[in-house]
Image (spheres, rainbow, N blue to C red):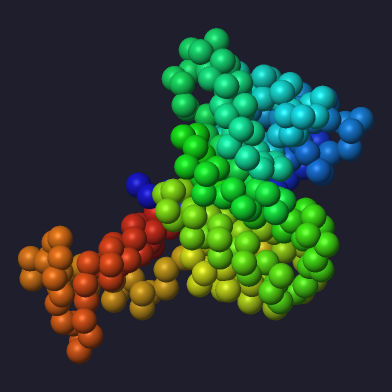
Length: 290
């Protein structure tokens, strides 16, 4: 079954209650944060809590990631060395700027997988591009073997540029477009940044529509109340599903496969349109509405 990657909920790993209750909000992915959300003097305890949670809690079909600390800090390597044997299989890799950063992480993960009888390559990485250099190197990073997603980190990115983060997000248009384009080339997910102004629901909803239309696969969020809005935008609507089923049926009846064009309701339908219809149907099935 096609996986859903619409909503990525950040939860601080130093909050024991959220380690157990985050599943009740039904995000597609949970990112337990060991980095920015956790004070320095709580990082070791937060890691211990997350290790225990991974060993004891059934997160069912929700993808569980840990945003580990960068490897250049005193905490990053220890995060990975303790979490992978405990069962962590997805990592949100912060401040990723170069292929060398990914390769350094890959070497550490390969060592741990071999030492713990885990097939090499099992642990996948979502690279957070949070600086101009990281965004510049998006394609090269996305093409590394362990990468399954690249994500924009807007707060650090705009801070690095000296830009102002606005509700319209025009200062992010280039970075967003580059990440979507190069994620598509590499065949990985493109996940958008968080919206921090929880009180501005209308602005958040408009941004979700905008980034979905740009081609993003999902969006990170910092509050459970944002999940339904993300799912509403990223889940295929009834009309889309019905039209997609008609397109697929017409394509099957016509015998079109590797090329050519058919006509449906006065409109020309070619292979890319059929592929989009197939994608919509897969997402509908994954969401349980087909």
